[in-house]
Length: 152
Image (cartoon, rainbow, N blue to C red; front, side, top):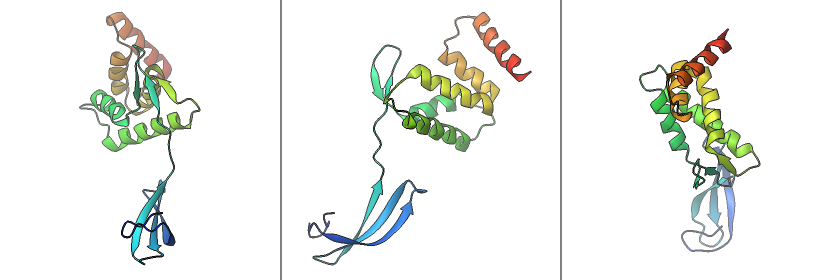
């Protein structure tokens, strides 16, 4: 690790601690040349996820877009931001754990609907209505009927 003060290439680790709830390691280092101390952070390198949209275009996965969609569905509902953030993190983690680096928006939408169904049924129906693009009241009613059948 190059010293930020003198640019010498050799340093020793003086202290290591977990950081960011275990997502990274904070290391205090001392330069073997100038003896000044500096901090580095070590994290696992994650490969970017690519989202394949309905029109075939590709974008890098953006958790904030996922979170914003869920926030709109949960507007004026008793669902905390912390719960939605946890769901977004769970979905991102499950996508990262898959071998495939390219994920369709339909797969992401299904994951969101599965999670929202357990948190708030109204938010689930709102999200499903936008995601599945209900064309008329009949498709909307068939989704509600499925939801009611699952409850019983």
